[in-house]
Image (tube, rainbow, N blue to C red):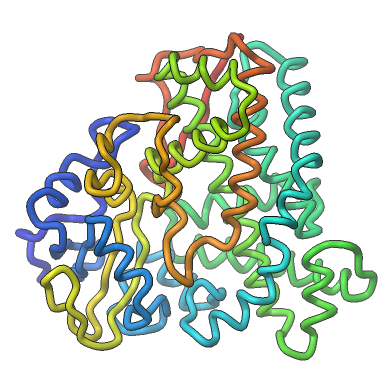
Length: 399
């Protein structure tokens, strides 16, 4: 029987912009402690910033979801990830082998070359939103289409299929999905991508999936490439879309900082605001998951082989030892050392692309729509407490 004296994880928020109070209490009183998951297991929760970086950079903590003791987020994610896994659920050297196939595409220099194209996408979506409103749902009209268009163009996935892959994605990132629903959505999306890879093998274009299916034909199966493509497609639009919506709402709650950002033509201020919002919001709010493969001492605690570990990066990004006055949003803060993208060899591969997209969005939307405002009170906005990536379901706005 699970020990009900151990706090349940994840925990409930009081303020939609802050980590749960219980999580902060644990961080202050016992920064490495046991928590209880949906299946009754009790992995270790790591809440302070230095220990989080130590865990995430230590190869003795495995990202392999197949290992006994791995702390799965939900029963649905357990079923799906045991059925097929991508490189983020692999350890070295296997992880590095697959990751290297993608690093060239996501290099800072390559991503910066996409900035003019991303700017055109952002401007066109703003034009469409202005033509259709006010009011408008910022999520449906802008926040979701922008990163979807970008990742579709990069991968070579037709944007015309966006309703299909966004529907599958919602099932995959929902904490309410059953194992059967998650597996069905993953299979449906993977089947589509496998068929698309077949078309690209026969008639390659200048996109990432064409390059993978032609250049890696001797080293990867179509199924493996499809798993990789599914990860890139889902993560490539879900995370950035939620940062656009939730980041905008956060700035609307801080009108002085929004006005400064809107009136500035300093790209360094915009880039700094992106890093601070990534730190402050930490939209991957279910933690980074690992399992110890040998006995390791972290922060004075002995974590034994086979025990699960959850690195609560939302708490780490509010650690006062790393970020003075951590509960204050400050777009002038030097926050680049946050752990919103993880840390170590498994840190987010697509972070250069996410940064450029957010810089273009935050540097353009509020300048072009200077009177942007909420169309409903904060109390009426639905937050994604039920999703593995945090954000807002809709954001009604006017201008």
